[in-house]
Image (cartoon, rainbow, N blue to C red; front, side, top):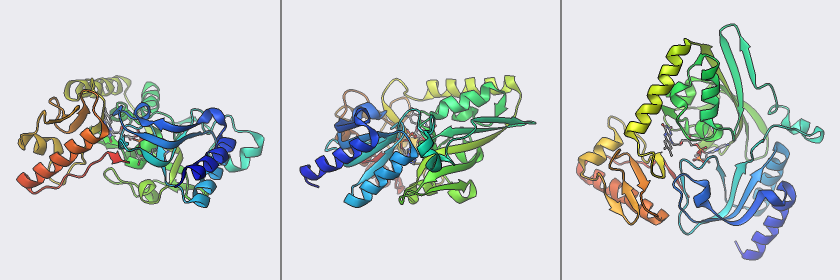
Length: 323
Ligand SMILES: Cc1cc2nc3c(=O)[nH]c(=O)nc-3n(C[C@H](O)[C@H](O)[C@H](O)COP(=O)(O)OP(=O)(O)OC[C@H]3O[C@@H](n4cnc5c(N)ncnc54)[C@H](O)[C@@H]3O)c2cc1C
């Protein structure tokens, strides 16, 4: 796409989102937990459904490549950058709905928390942090999200990835989601309609945008909830290289194996290219050890995949989305 056309698109999006919510040639290292990567041609933060719908119209009109970004905790942008539009739901998306936007927002705005008998229903917007939601329900004495509290993603990213940890996945606690499809239509999908399985959901396959998710939890024993939160947090600190930038487990768990064990058995603990390294603490993590470029990280990922395949005949599939 030529520069002039990007200029035209930028001007239209600026009108939709407002000048303080849009950037040109935005470095993606500040938007991803790998803390490296190239620039996005256009980066926009969207504040409500009306803006999102209008943005989708622009995308369609120009055939513009686009990507929905959550907290960037499972994303790596190549050094060459992303030639297209990165969309993020702005802080406060879904809240403070103006009168003229009410029609678009009718499924999105709504009660945040309802407690009834021994269960709690909580609604969270796509851009909210999963950890904050998990801690809020735990604090109120409801069980089911304790193990998810340490996942550093947004609600949208967690639903898209069916994120999970220590035996619980999003699919175990979710009731429904409100999404926008690539025609700008808002739909409510039940858990069953989301087609959730290991690190997979219909959100990814159908290119849906998660606007809001509804979770249902049951009352639990407060001391057990606190204990579970604490033990998961300690296990992460002890086993994961949280002191370095990364995207968590770099590879999906291959059936019948553990990626970290295969990588370790292939002799790749500490394997390094430039500033990127297979973590010495947890071989399932590729870390940005020392000013790694995205190319360094991609090279480590490719080398690990090739070496594990050569030795064990198992093809590792990256969990991290490489743009
Ligand atoms: C230290 C560390 C530990 C981690 N531990 C875990 C773990 O225990 N379990 C686990 O499952 N993951 C883990 N992860 C990976 C990551 O946090 C999860 O995959 C998380 O769910 C990604 O959410 P995000 O908001 O950062 O999404 P992003 O990384 O920004 O995006 C990931 C995918 O979600 C899509 N997406 C994001 N927002 C939306 C939206 N609103 N609508 C539609 N699609 C959207 C993106 O398009 C992309 O396809 C870890 C990562 C790190 C850095």
